Length: 277
Figure 1 (cartoon, rainbow, N blue to C red):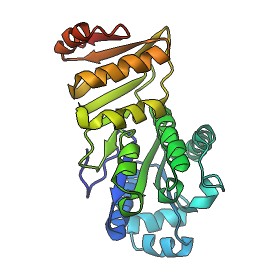
Figure 2: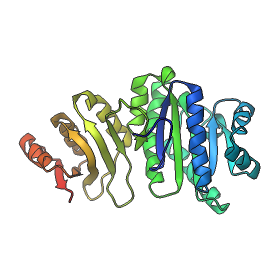
Figure 3: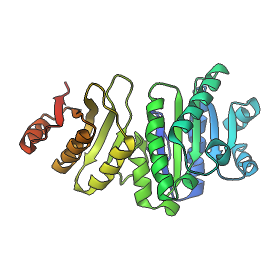
Figure 4: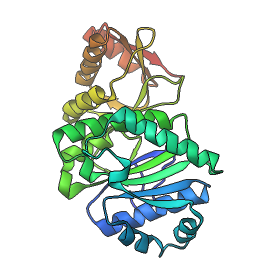
């Protein structure tokens, strides 16, 4: 979780749910200003009319200067994402990867974007595709200097849709979200689990696992779980079933040795606990 008024973005990927557009705009401007201070190129991707967005941003000195220098840009939502408004996850990651390399070639330290993506997740099909994209782009961020604030208007989408999206981000301002499933650096496993997985989270956890679509290597799915404070027995059963469908073993790396005893008691052949030192 992060402070609502001070978006940190230290992990590179922030889910930002908002009720009041004015509050969101202030948070977005702070996030972009931090990127400029770090030498990044910044984009503000918005469904709003570009001139109205530019007029607001010109009131922020650091961003106004960056707009003049070409280090900041307002990008219409429709020119960044597919015209049918259902994202192609792999194609969108590739597009941001190309933009990141262009930013580096121009002398910037990376690319940082704020994307107001509410219009891209209004239908079930859109939500499913975009949530899958969120995890794929999160993996890309683990190895390249790309950062993003993904913003969603909560009154339009509802709490459930926002939770489905936020659960796939390492950082979020959604206080009621109990767990997160997100990417890790290459060589550090397949994903990380953090927070708490209790009975109220079972359905959401299953949805997050399906959309992350983790691919085993060497017959294992390695999950870094040192940030997981609680994991109930049904969540372990979910992991066992998920690993079974992928003909793999889910390896939980955790500082909680009691989980190994619980896995033995439940007789879950597709889950193995490795106690991190």
